[in-house]
Image (cartoon, rainbow, N blue to C red; front, side, top):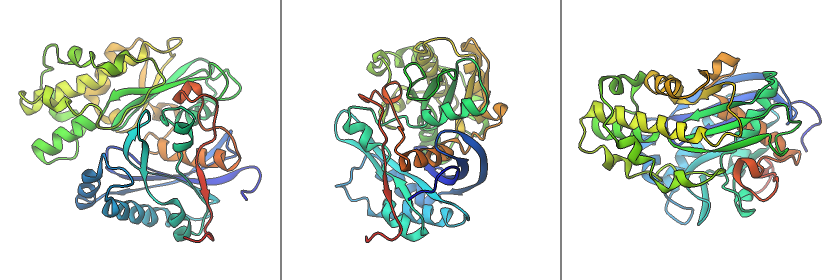
Length: 367
């Protein structure tokens, strides 16, 4: 049983960019944020990243033992370095996401991790939401709401996460709770870093376009971003979510371009998807706070600033850690699960009613 009041929660996140595992501690009661604790990062090796990349798109009945071993070892190695923690939020590694079909697959065994760490572990955050008709993603918006309250924001604002996939959270911080009607609207905007990273890996053997250096040398192909926005996904109303490889055909759209032009065009496509998504906001946000690796791409940020009618800044401008925001989110959500508080609602995932997802594994439970 989790103690009452404030606790030290440790969250871990391994995103679709497959760069590594982020881990962070926050001081929270599951509603308010009181402070931020230590953070650590464990990059995947090239070999580990190759194993995980080969498992993308796989489901639990596929052979994912090698990828599972990578996920478990990396998390156990990193999370065991923290002390004075009350519980752990373990997201695992998303391999496949098909909320309207087979569901969602986050690789990782929370029960085994609980035994390895000697701590209660909250995991499998998305399945309950999907069972109740939701998209199962994005899940960070409830934490974004808490961040907005911690910042003492007084007007609607937006968080934009630019990871492998982009997602947007519009927040009205004047509402009392994140599940209140009109407090949140959240959805995946489209591809963000994933197609750029895949291009860099395939053509140059590099994990990503550092500082947008290659895109800066290129020219955006005429009409390609506009053509991309004709994809059926952009006609759907939010909430809505994506699998990392939903837009696998993007590589074909830039196949005839040289490396620099292809990088520039994929970067413009990521920005165009965000611009399209902003049209769904109930009211224009006062500012957009950008998190995830994409905020470090000056070319992408310049494109967004040119197109959006409000300030677009990294979350660090608000005193937050853009590298660790998602890890912190799963620490926060873990406490909410342990206390039976909602972790998603109709405005964030399209679920029929506010729901508390996740399951809790205790360290003493048999395997």
